[in-house]
Length: 435
Ligand code: S3P
Image (cartoon, rainbow, N blue to C red):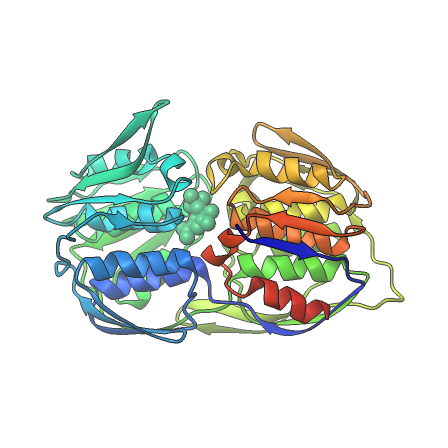
């Protein structure tokens, strides 16, 4: 079990590239595999989660070559996948298991897919219901009124559907849209508020017709996708740790190059701005249908910039769902109370993030209260280094590392192997900007 020891820093500086976006990397492999012709992906995230997606498609007969951070896929077309010899393994990746299930629903064979201990605790009824309506049957472990992996997906003739999601979820939405590619007709998903739209953007980039009207998205099947060149921007969810570190350090001068700024993902920028932090977003440009920009943070030593507590909830939540653990760290340093609500989904992520981030930040001295659907944090509090743990959750581990940078004394984070799922090289980038 790896540990990461952090000592406080008074100055953060440097220019860094953040690894490729995890959500977009998964989707590029999936669409590339079922497209006609070749797909070339640049700046692919070589993290364990995305490698699990590659592995699943290789097991279904897709030729995928890795060359550094470039991935080349020989697409098999919508109906070219073959039944894997064994069980597919999604590792720690919820996106892999939920999105692939949509594709598996359209296959004329039965597949079993599972993952690590954390994946086996992630609820899957949310995908079984819509896929069942579309004509696929999913079996798994039935407990506590939900369904858990391993999942066996009996695919077949898929019917179009119109499905209203009870909770905004890009994973569930994407699962249904991917199954909809195999249906004869129009499949529609209606969300209570918009979640990340990478699937929609990439489907249209690969030549499929996608209609978006407010919170309603439709695809038309049977679809025919054409392989493309996809250049992946840096992951704003990974950039968030460096944005927070730059905002919190007494002195900083940091440039993050080429970070994705998709408006369904940029809630962290809005939160930092509302808290009183300054981030300059420059040179915005579009590549492969996704916007990207450079981000600059400058905190001159002479200027004391105070953060203030804010309320975060409603439609903003899906735009920053993965950033809430690091927002909690920011909130410990803000004057007053930060209330995070409408975020019950956090309880069913890689860990129960409401519980895990509050228990660990409390060990560092934070005033943080757990609510059923969020957190209440009161600041500012001088954090003190301690031994904390990640609960095998990459986002908890990296958020605690940011807290360690501003805590007094040494912070030891236990169980940090999980960082490899989304951010290989995180520790060396932290060392680079603090030395
Ligand atoms: C993701 C969607 C989000 C997010 C996850 C990645 C995706 O989950 O938390 O890390 O790539 O679609 P939900 O859609 O379940 O909220």
